[in-house]
Image 1 (cartoon, one colour):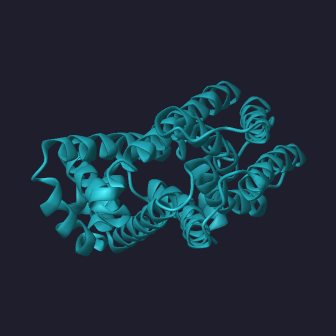
Image 2 (cartoon, helix red, strand yellow; image 1 turned 90 degrees about the vertical axis):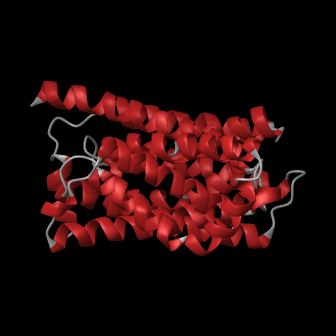
Length: 300
């Protein structure tokens, strides 16, 4: 039991880190498409391309699914679509780092609700401190935050918490990664009204097509595959705190790819969220409920 837990925790943490980096750089790449296709159009195309890729690679065996499994996969897809649409609408109006910081309120609140250990609470407080500093930087810094963009980020935060719950539940009741592929199909169908007009424009320019494919791979296929795997290894509360790395990776991606400056205050915030993520990864309890059991008990 101890060796299994020791192996699972660092592996799960590495998967979340890979997801954060990929998702942030994919979002930065997506902003290059916003002027031509619009934020919601980019979301629709990205989800559609990702759905096709995952269906081909995973080939979910849906014929054997029962009603409970279908419900879990569809719920997962609704959460996935809502989170992506709201987040892309947010980063169309406010910088990437602050947008992710606000969006992170979702998993942060979820972690606070699910946490039962004093050490988890300490790391959570540290992460909250970092998120607060990012928020202060957004308010007093040179870049004023658009109120509508903040609103979309808050909606994305709610969907992100919903996504964590729905993803963990789908992973617990559906074997393999079939739920992930079906969830992307559901999300892309929901965004279809925005995807069709954007696709008509995108197919006329090979550069737009390549950017859309790159965005789908970095912003959807890779990160959500990694997160889906991580949720099989980590309790939801630990997964939520580890996601505190994403504001840091988003700030880095915004600086490297979009020229969005990182002030000393923002860098201090990054240091705090990284410390919280590393701490929750390295300090492990002596006994631990398996993720599937934790999910089942939390859904009762």
